[in-house]
Amino acid sequence: MVAQLQYINHKIQVKPENEVLTFTFDQLLLQRGGRLGPVTLAYETWGELNATGDNAILITHALTGSSHAHDVEDPENPKVAWWNPLIGPGKYFDTSRFFVICSNIIGGCSGSTGPSSINPLTGRPYGMRFPVITIRDMVRAQRKLIEHLGVRRLAMVVGGSIGGQQALEWAVHYPHLVDKVIVMAASAAVSAQAIAFNEVARQSIMADPAWLCGDYLPGQGPTTGLSIARMLAMITYQSEESMEMRFARNSVQREVVTAPTFSPELGGRFDVENYLYYQGDRLAQRFDANSYLYVSRAMDLYDVSEDYLSLDEALRRIRSQILFVGIRSDFLFPASQVRWLAEKIQAVGGNAQYAELDSPHGHDAFLKEWSKIVDTLQEF
Image 1 (tube, one colour):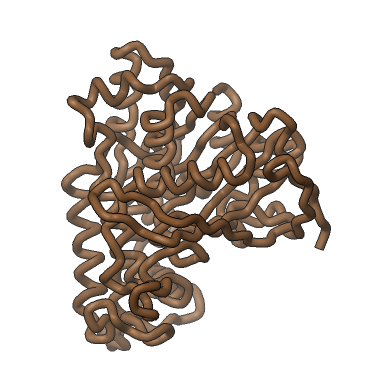
Image 2: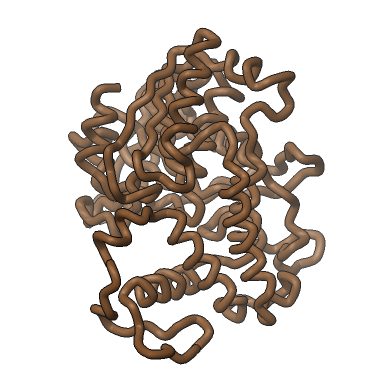
């Protein structure tokens, strides 16, 4: 692999491209009480930190994402890294100018401390003994990481969906540390409808006999329940418009995927059903079911005004230039809610802008509409 030089705590280290690194610290005091420790964050970086430590961009990932936002060996392929087309030399997140960081969130299962990690008190995986975590806890852990990397000030924090919630929390919780913030497909708090969908997904996991109250062994977890949870989530990430464009009422067009329940087809199979089975199976192979419970709940619990006297008080803390990007067809975080928040920040004196992606692809547009995303962000 090609090696890159990066400055960490003013010392030069050689890091192979695409290597996932880890940073461990003693403990994290949690927003809802208690503490977690030790805490490990998995992360990746691209580009070099400058001598003044102020050219860093923090990218925050979505619900089932990881630190692998960019792949140096296959830089144009969005299937190998979730924001690949946006990151790299000469791209919007230009790694020839900026030190780009992406870390896996706490509660996740891609190298960071989460329910599948070993509890030092018992020597066994935490399972459901893992504490409740919040978006603010994720951001506080990221703050420790950037300090470890020698970052004195962030040029930008950017993310979509639950990553957008993290970006917003950075703007409110650490207002003097961030120059610019981009919040994509996220708002001040999710709606009752979004909470309802997430709860049905969680219940499908917990209803699987293999869940065992969260004490399943690695590789023996509730794959049926997790697959169905993912199927439901994928419906909320699409729009009716995009599903009609992509699937309509067509019979299965691709290799047939086994249903998570091994159920009969009852007169044939629609292409959209096969797509959902495929997406459910893929997630069940790579993601931890307990992490899905905790991270989706963190999304539900997030309210940017929590621990402040009012929403206005929370939003007045923002000092960053902040861009909100809504998606015309987003079912999960409707564009109207994203626009409303931008206007609310403007009303309390903040420097906020709103832009809208005219896309039929629903919530998932922030992971698909590369040229439209770049056009929108370049104006910012």
